Every structure is written in C-alpha cells, then in structure tokens.
Length: 204
Image 1: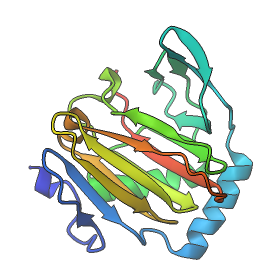
Image 2 (image 1 turned 90 degrees about the horizontal axis):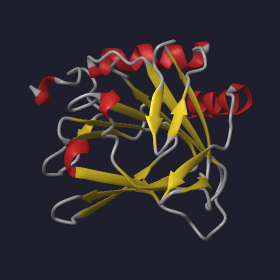
Image 3 (image 1 turned 180 degrees about the vertical axis):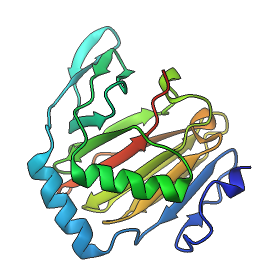
C-alpha cells in the first residue's frame, strides 16, 4: 500500500533507506528560477509572525518566523499554540494541487517557516498530533538556502542527515512520524534565508 503512495511518473523521487519509515526526496522538484521567484513572492506576501510556545511550563519565542494557511476549518495546535489558517493565496494553492497529484493525497493546509539565518532552527519533534491522523503524509518544499535536516529513530537512536536543497521536495508518510523525530539544527556560520513549506491534511 505504501509503495503505491506516489505517482510512478515522478521518476526524480528517491526513497531514503530508513527502517520504519516511508521517506522520498527529490532535489530538483522545482527548477531554480521557479523556486527563486516563489521564495521572493512568499517572503513578501505571507503573514509572517514570531509565535511563542509552551516549553516546560513557560512561553518561549520560537527561533523562526511562521505562517499558517489553509481551508477555513484547518486549525492546528501544537505546544500550546493554536494556529488559525489564513486564506489560500494563489502560489500556495497551485503548489498544493500539484503535490496532491504526486502524493495521491488531499492537503488542506500548509505551515510556512522562514529561517532567516543560521540561528533560526527547529528542535527535535514528530508531526504526530491527533489532527494529522494515523500515518499522515506530509509534503515539504524547500526554498532558498540549503540546510541540514536530521532524522532520529525514537527507539534505536539511529540518525540520518539530509541536505535539503533549493527547490527540493521531501515526502514523509507511512510510519515515519510514529518512529522518527526530525529537526533543523542551528548553524554558527553565516547562511542565507530559507523558507520551508509543509503541506498537511488536518482531520476534524
């Protein structure tokens, strides 16, 4: 069943050799010019904000900017933060429709994260909230600076690192969120900005 998840004509997708997971990666999902134009448009158009989440009982500002877009009913909660979706803009809707064909999955929302420099990051977590359902499919598009993306198996501790490139697509499905956490670590050197789009389906 999991092997049939993605359209056969997407020959650029490669499956990662990870146990207890279904992870595919394509470095050139978007050509460089298209990805660069999309990066500039989203940087200017999205309703970016720096939210705070609950960490060990106290509110902490997250080290990145983010924006939540989707269908009206697609609210999302994590770490004490409730995100109410902004209405779709054309660029995000068109990308959502293309990804739905590739993944054979409907998406009703997208979380946009803007990592402005190497100090912006994402800590270890799994996208396993109840609203995402059992074995969620998540499509992640990277625009801008190449950054390392780390996986860690929750039981064995095995780690896998993948450099997500400008215009790339990462697909996570099957048991991935049940067995693996992922993160985007800080970088001490000066690096450019990166926008990441993770398309999801919120189940009510």
